[in-house]
Structures are given as structure tokens and as C-alpha cells.
Image (cartoon, rainbow, N blue to C red; front, side, top):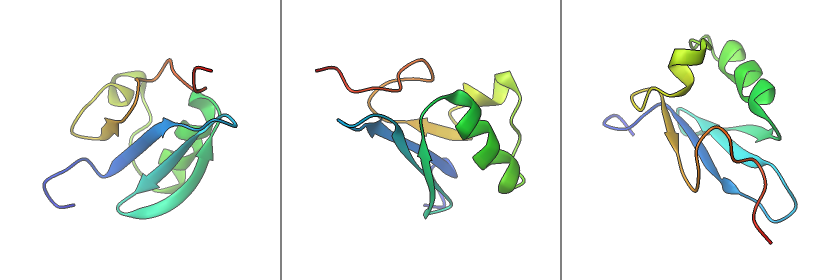
Length: 72
């Protein structure tokens, strides 16, 4: 974990939303960008728009910040 981003946004789930882990701990399920921003604030991490695209902060798996639902 030390070499990777502290935040991981996992691929969209079939039922909607994406699981978010921060520093290896589950932060919850985000259903849109505002949920992720709240998780970042709670963890005292930056939540600016530029930080959302920062690969050193967030590792987006299965799609970027505009993907919140699994394709069916």
C-alpha cells in the first residue's frame, strides 16, 4: 500500500455505486462524486477537483470519476 495511492475507488458494482477504500480501510460505497468527496474530507485528504484526477491520490479501477454504475 505504501507505493500506491491512499484512495482506491473500486469498479462499479452491479447494484450501483463503487466501493471506496482509504489507506486500506473500507470507507463505504460512493454512488456519485459527492459521496467520494465526503469520504476524502472525513479522512483529511484533499477534495478539490484537481485532486480527484490525481493518480497519486486516487486509483480509479474500472472507470474514472464519471463512471458510477456497472454497464448491464
